[in-house]
Image 1: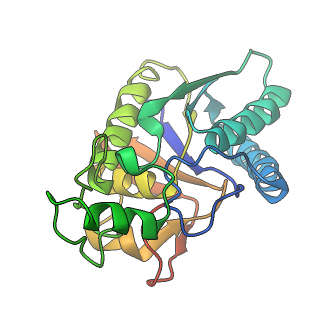
Image 2 (image 1 turned 180 degrees about the horizontal axis):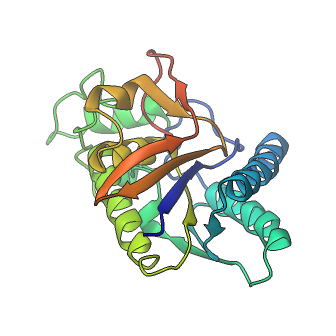
Length: 232
């Protein structure tokens, strides 16, 4: 039976506002992020050649610009290697955890908004890193909720690869925190490992569907600084 492998790729570095939860920031890759994506895409192609994996001709990306640009650099590099046309499709389901109507406010501004709303109590000190905490604002999600929709997208998208005749690799480009929580939901990480690890910019984590279960088969998680929040 052909192997089915998903490559989970966190976007490259980008122009990010300081002290602002990065989830829905609309800014592009910086020069370093572009270089990271170009280098990592070539490494992925090399991995596919070494393992004799076909690369799926459809790449799935978050709709946020930094992820789309990373995916487009991957698409362009893979197209040089492929004879078939390589397509890129963007999905809201692969976006990072949303803080809802607080999107792109600074951390201090979010604290102030919640603190001055008579309906809410003070935010817990660890609200940014609590996997189950959801801001009490329209459109907000918990990290686990974001991981659930990302995991569901990966599962459903990989269903389209069932029936292929050769081992096949499909690329997903998104965001670190949502991918790590998705990895937990898929059974690839333990819950305590979500906070222990991060993801390197643009470098893939390879997971394989084996007998109905997902297994980490390649790519290195990044050891986290425990003082940092779990946001992307």
